[in-house]
Length: 132
Image (tube, rainbow, N blue to C red; front, side, top):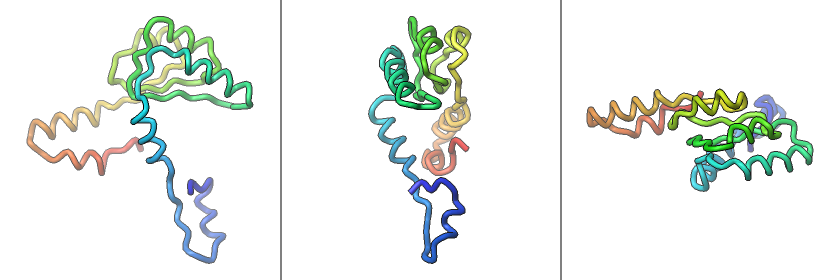
């Protein structure tokens, strides 16, 4: 499960496959919460993580609302990066906080719109569009 180096597979005299936990972790995150608005809980959690020895702290969400004092609180916190998609414009917040980063998802959104408009199957998006 989640081998740190793929070369580890060569040290076994039986078949070994590297299974990934990431799909299950991502599903859990998506089902729990995918919006960042008020960041107080993230800032508090980051402080605790830093006190306990965390080297880097990343916060990720699909929708970065980041209202009111969120950019300032993030900038002053132990959080290293907040990564959000561009489903919501947040250019002003990025000007206020250098730790906010954006992942562009326009490709998948435009492809979904095109497929719906042309009456094509959406299943392609689930099989063939990935982050890498």
